[in-house]
Image (tube, rainbow, N blue to C red; front, side, top):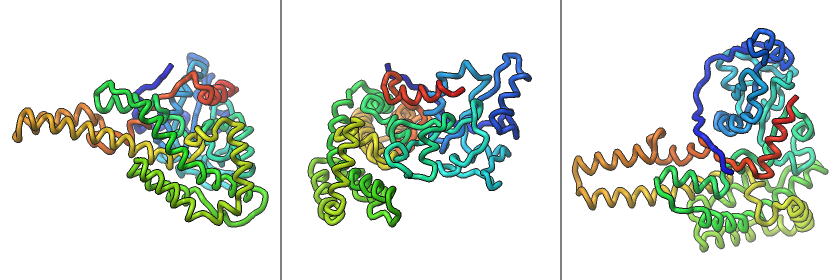
Length: 358
């Protein structure tokens, strides 16, 4: 069953938790409430992540007086000060500051992207904490983006925006398969380099940034010819590295196969923003084409003039509200209205982490 709902990000007023940021102190506020329940404070990486985590934390909302999903940046703006062990104020977006938050427990947790912490030993200094701390909730895939761009979800988003019932699932699935085929040598090289660095220190010869640059051409053109060119350019440009890390790449393939992520599920493993850039441009192309077709029909029926202008304005309102802009609508609708399959085993893994908060 697919679930999803509109949870647009709204700036919240200062939480009633005030300066009581230690989990145990928050728990003690239950004595002040009629329902005898304390709140749960959930810190996430950025404001775009809030709707996704709100949706998943609803599975335990009966345990708490309220569940406040927020960011360190927002907390700081509301005069709630979080500090690390050295006394430095934590107020930046992203995972680095979140992983330094103190006083976690059953009433104060953080929810983060797993990144490569699940695949690569010592990927970060805090990799073991991500893997083992019950108060650090993490995605199953690389990031939230990888969870919210399934073919079924993208199909629903496109139908909502363009206002038709055309089925985009098979088209997008086919595109993801082609994306995987181009991504495979890039991602396995990156992971082989990261595996090597985890055992011996040194400069990383191939990085996430370089992978994003190598596959960036697919964000603008997604036809068969461009896919082939992208593949060939990578093979030529990174030939020496591919030879150097050949054995490591084969080991990575075996590891990913054991996790059912190779070769078809690599889009679940790649950096979330890299994947979303590709998905966003696919959606943008679809929405633009439908919009242009509808505008042409309006001009054909009404000609040029105020009536046609009014009809186009109505079309824009129906397609792009509440964003009032085509690009913003396509980009933010997926974040603001996350659609997930709550029967999917990888989503269930996240839900189980949340249910095990005690």
